Image (tube, rainbow, N blue to C red; front, side, top):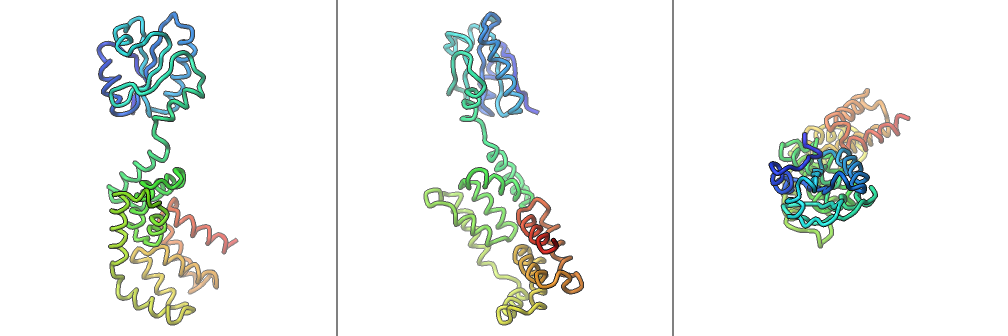
Length: 284
């Protein structure tokens, strides 16, 4: 668990003010006992340090006791607040400020919620768990207004889950100006996946269904093959079509496979949520 705040001494100054700033922003509060505005500002800073739960370190410097450190940072009046990042001061203010202004300062340098979700998604993708990565990446994608790097990670997750149309849809929305190296890598993965030959049994059933689109038996067999080969959206769509005509199709077997596919996806998976709602709409 990360420390939220620390009192600076000569012994820990370099470690906490400089070294730590390469890991996360350090908010330095220069204060003194005799300074009235310092006493009104410090509770605000401490409250925010607790609220942000380690996203930044609040480093408190008693300017009377640590005069040399205050002088090194050019402090001339109290309170003085600085943000240190990558070893150097990059922003700050002098004098007491309301909480809203302190928040504005912090928001410029602290990671957004979607940055954390993106990092979580990347970790899960690297661990080979694309299914678990999908939920945080989808949420990050929507919350960030479809930021390009998050879109690439989401498309990558879809590709790993063999959900090719959804990966294509995400990549298609990335603006030309944002189509950098990461986009090209994911696009190449998508093209390989698109070119991969489907199992012969799937191809045969697809041809049969194309020739006879209303054949329920072929739809069911193809849906089963789709589910076994990871084409979850395709499987659910065909099963949903069968359930629209008869909720108890094939003595309940269609509905069972439908719910089994949703269970495999996991309750938080956006595709599972989408088709769970479709099932509810049929039931109620």
